[in-house]
Length: 152
Image 1 (cartoon, rainbow, N blue to C red):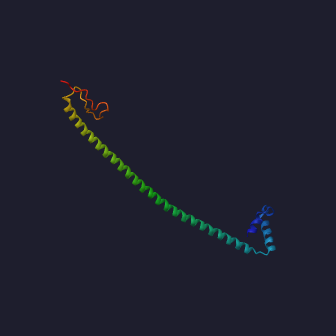
Image 2: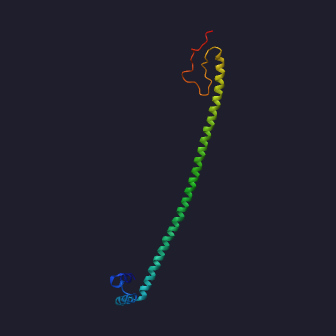
Image 3: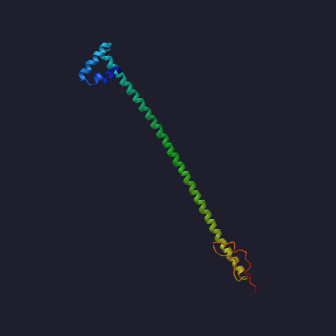
Protein backbone atom coordinates (compact mmCIF):
# COMPACT_ATOMS: atom_id res chain seq x y z
CA UNK A 1 0.00 0.00 0.00
CA UNK A 2 2.78 2.44 0.91
CA UNK A 3 4.65 1.52 -2.29
CA UNK A 4 1.52 2.25 -4.33
CA UNK A 5 1.20 5.65 -2.65
CA UNK A 6 4.89 6.35 -3.34
CA UNK A 7 4.49 5.30 -6.98
CA UNK A 8 1.56 7.70 -7.40
CA UNK A 9 3.78 10.55 -6.20
CA UNK A 10 6.71 9.72 -8.51
CA UNK A 11 7.55 12.11 -11.35
CA UNK A 12 6.84 9.34 -13.90
CA UNK A 13 3.23 8.73 -12.87
CA UNK A 14 2.05 11.88 -11.07
CA UNK A 15 1.24 13.80 -14.25
CA UNK A 16 -0.54 10.94 -16.01
CA UNK A 17 -4.31 10.67 -16.36
CA UNK A 18 -6.17 8.65 -13.71
CA UNK A 19 -6.78 5.78 -16.12
CA UNK A 20 -3.10 5.56 -17.11
CA UNK A 21 -2.10 5.77 -13.42
CA UNK A 22 -4.45 2.90 -12.61
CA UNK A 23 -3.11 0.73 -15.41
CA UNK A 24 0.52 1.50 -14.51
CA UNK A 25 -0.08 0.53 -10.88
CA UNK A 26 -1.87 -2.67 -11.90
CA UNK A 27 1.09 -3.65 -14.12
CA UNK A 28 3.52 -3.01 -11.25
CA UNK A 29 1.37 -5.00 -8.78
CA UNK A 30 1.05 -7.89 -11.22
CA UNK A 31 4.82 -7.92 -11.78
CA UNK A 32 5.33 -8.03 -8.01
CA UNK A 33 2.74 -10.78 -7.53
CA UNK A 34 0.51 -8.61 -5.34
CA UNK A 35 -3.27 -8.73 -5.64
CA UNK A 36 -5.34 -5.53 -5.68
CA UNK A 37 -7.44 -6.95 -2.82
CA UNK A 38 -4.30 -7.17 -0.67
CA UNK A 39 -3.52 -3.50 -1.34
CA UNK A 40 -7.09 -2.48 -0.48
CA UNK A 41 -7.08 -4.66 2.65
CA UNK A 42 -3.76 -3.14 3.74
CA UNK A 43 -5.17 0.36 3.15
CA UNK A 44 -8.25 -0.43 5.27
CA UNK A 45 -6.09 -1.83 8.09
CA UNK A 46 -3.89 1.27 8.03
CA UNK A 47 -6.93 3.57 8.00
CA UNK A 48 -8.43 1.74 10.99
CA UNK A 49 -5.12 1.98 12.85
CA UNK A 50 -5.03 5.73 12.22
CA UNK A 51 -8.64 6.07 13.39
CA UNK A 52 -7.92 4.01 16.52
CA UNK A 53 -4.85 6.08 17.33
CA UNK A 54 -6.88 9.26 16.86
CA UNK A 55 -9.48 7.95 19.34
CA UNK A 56 -6.72 7.14 21.84
CA UNK A 57 -5.28 10.64 21.47
CA UNK A 58 -8.75 12.18 21.79
CA UNK A 59 -9.50 10.12 24.92
CA UNK A 60 -6.16 11.16 26.44
CA UNK A 61 -7.01 14.78 25.71
CA UNK A 62 -10.52 14.39 27.16
CA UNK A 63 -9.13 12.74 30.30
CA UNK A 64 -6.49 15.44 30.68
CA UNK A 65 -9.09 18.16 30.14
CA UNK A 66 -11.34 16.67 32.85
CA UNK A 67 -8.39 16.34 35.23
CA UNK A 68 -7.24 19.91 34.64
CA UNK A 69 -10.77 21.28 34.94
CA UNK A 70 -11.13 19.52 38.29
CA UNK A 71 -7.76 20.84 39.42
CA UNK A 72 -8.63 24.36 38.25
CA UNK A 73 -11.94 24.23 40.13
CA UNK A 74 -10.07 23.15 43.26
CA UNK A 75 -7.56 25.97 42.80
CA UNK A 76 -10.38 28.49 42.30
CA UNK A 77 -11.93 27.24 45.55
CA UNK A 78 -8.59 27.61 47.35
CA UNK A 79 -8.26 31.15 46.00
CA UNK A 80 -11.78 32.02 47.16
CA UNK A 81 -11.14 30.56 50.62
CA UNK A 82 -7.78 32.30 50.96
CA UNK A 83 -9.27 35.58 49.74
CA UNK A 84 -12.04 35.23 52.31
CA UNK A 85 -9.48 34.56 55.07
CA UNK A 86 -7.38 37.57 54.08
CA UNK A 87 -10.42 39.84 53.88
CA UNK A 88 -11.43 38.69 57.36
CA UNK A 89 -7.95 39.54 58.65
CA UNK A 90 -8.13 42.97 57.02
CA UNK A 91 -11.51 43.53 58.65
CA UNK A 92 -10.11 42.41 62.00
CA UNK A 93 -7.11 44.75 61.60
CA UNK A 94 -9.40 47.66 60.75
CA UNK A 95 -11.60 46.86 63.76
CA UNK A 96 -8.52 46.75 66.03
CA UNK A 97 -7.32 50.10 64.71
CA UNK A 98 -10.76 51.62 65.14
CA UNK A 99 -10.96 50.32 68.71
CA UNK A 100 -7.50 51.69 69.54
CA UNK A 101 -8.41 55.07 68.03
CA UNK A 102 -11.54 55.18 70.19
CA UNK A 103 -9.42 54.32 73.25
CA UNK A 104 -6.94 57.09 72.41
CA UNK A 105 -9.69 59.64 71.86
CA UNK A 106 -11.36 58.69 75.16
CA UNK A 107 -8.02 58.98 76.95
CA UNK A 108 -7.36 62.36 75.31
CA UNK A 109 -10.75 63.60 76.54
CA UNK A 110 -9.91 62.45 80.11
CA UNK A 111 -6.46 64.03 79.78
CA UNK A 112 -7.98 67.35 78.71
CA UNK A 113 -10.36 67.28 81.68
CA UNK A 114 -7.46 66.55 84.02
CA UNK A 115 -5.30 69.30 82.48
CA UNK A 116 -8.14 71.80 82.90
CA UNK A 117 -8.52 70.78 86.54
CA UNK A 118 -4.76 71.14 87.09
CA UNK A 119 -4.67 74.46 85.20
CA UNK A 120 -7.47 75.83 87.37
CA UNK A 121 -5.69 74.76 90.54
CA UNK A 122 -2.42 76.39 89.39
CA UNK A 123 -4.11 79.51 87.99
CA UNK A 124 -4.38 81.09 91.45
CA UNK A 125 -0.61 81.08 91.85
CA UNK A 126 0.80 82.19 88.45
CA UNK A 127 0.33 85.15 86.10
CA UNK A 128 0.65 82.97 82.97
CA UNK A 129 -0.61 79.45 83.41
CA UNK A 130 2.08 76.93 82.36
CA UNK A 131 -0.45 74.11 82.11
CA UNK A 132 -1.62 73.35 78.59
CA UNK A 133 -5.25 72.57 78.02
CA UNK A 134 -5.28 71.82 74.30
CA UNK A 135 -5.87 68.53 72.58
CA UNK A 136 -2.50 68.78 70.78
CA UNK A 137 -0.58 68.47 74.03
CA UNK A 138 2.34 70.59 75.23
CA UNK A 139 5.62 71.09 73.49
CA UNK A 140 8.79 70.28 75.41
CA UNK A 141 9.41 74.02 76.02
CA UNK A 142 6.11 74.69 77.83
CA UNK A 143 6.09 72.02 80.56
CA UNK A 144 7.59 72.50 83.94
CA UNK A 145 8.37 76.19 83.42
CA UNK A 146 8.20 77.88 86.84
CA UNK A 147 9.20 81.43 85.76
CA UNK A 148 5.59 82.56 85.74
CA UNK A 149 5.08 82.25 89.50
CA UNK A 150 3.19 85.18 91.09
CA UNK A 151 5.04 87.13 93.63
CA UNK A 152 2.04 88.93 95.30
